[in-house]
Image 1 (tube, rainbow, N blue to C red):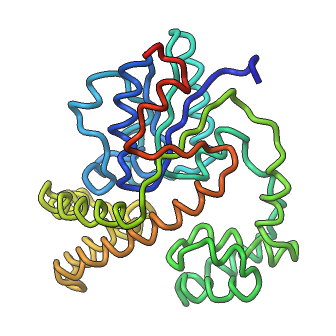
Image 2 (image 1 turned 180 degrees about the vertical axis):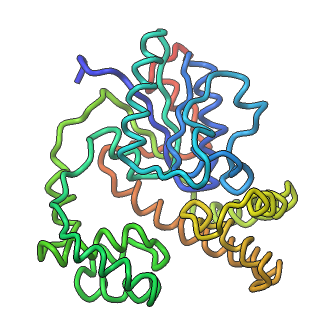
Length: 305
């Protein structure tokens, strides 16, 4: 792969400390940071997404942060296209592209391209979208479990987009979406890369998550969500259905007390982190590095330290 452009990736579960480690690596290795998180691309979603502070982003170039409004769609295909352009630009300046994030699908799309999925019958998609509106995502998730248990186990019952995609695939083709994704696993890499997965003991990680949620409230998460509502953004928008935002919207609507909202955010974040741990620990291309031993990365990328 020596003839391919080089990229360094730092991934890991939420709250493990990716941003802090990436900043240290970038400062030592003439690197520029590229966001690999599906929510940090959005403006106004700062506290709830744990976006790097402005002071940190001013220390060196950061890319693909704050590029969209919350009502603009964005997916793995869009990320791949935008990241490719940024990586080429960084290489042209003689720097190292450093992609940082916990959205496994985005990172996989960047490194290996996207799976070519079969065409879905429009009638099936329309029927599923109608059922989603009437029955909710939990009901469709239950049906997916009956038809494609492997994929259902990977998806949260609130993940409307992926549940729809998985159901419409199996209903159209009779085969699991996982079947098509597994066929794609043998695609050639698109970059010469080192993928570092920052790991941490689960109990320690959960403690960090609980503390970080409390810090988010102290920093003004509720005011951030109130500001989004005042700007006219619907709580039904996909980015605002993410962890933290949906609970704060529910609190503002009187459906949850603040204490209930905080506890819900902490629990949902712990569950999300567990799924991230499973994803990255099963990635044969990712090199596990304990977050406290992050300096090992410097020797892996030959920074001369």
